[in-house]
Image (cartoon, rainbow, N blue to C red):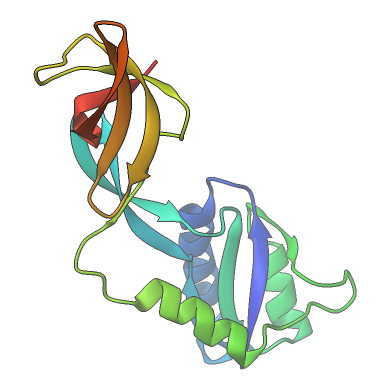
Amino acid sequence: MEWYVIHVYSGYERKVKRLLGQEIAAENMSDKFGRIFIPAENVSRIRGGKRRTVERQIYPGYILVEMEMTKETSRLILSTPGVTKFLGSRLEPEPLSQEEVKRIEVMIEAERPTAIPEVPFIRGESVRIVEGPFADFTGTVEEIYPEREKLKVMVTIFGRSTPVELSFLQAQPI
């Protein structure tokens, strides 16, 4: 069996994975298919002042399928609703190399103690401070420290630019 990448409608990855599993079982082709997975990672996001952990897809619109490439398996994949095509040439889908598969598996299956923080700010962006002693002040993002989930904001106080270190929760983009 080799790994193939199939292109699906963006946002339909989970639905296509579920439908593929059902079709494989209905056609009794489980011996010709291995694993099917969606490359994704957990990300910590701040929405409405609250931290949430969500799953973010690494390659939106793509699913990896381990399978034997035959006319029947190819037909089954391409006839599944939501699937557009295989990655590769139109006549011959191209399998992934073992190095590519290992690299993707390491990215996906690596045990992370915490979710990767998503940085909701850009350097040079104007922000409004929402809590703390500088609440309701505005400033410009000078530096971002994603590993500590902090940022340095330059705030004008009494006509002078002053650096203020804030957590991601204490500032909002304007």
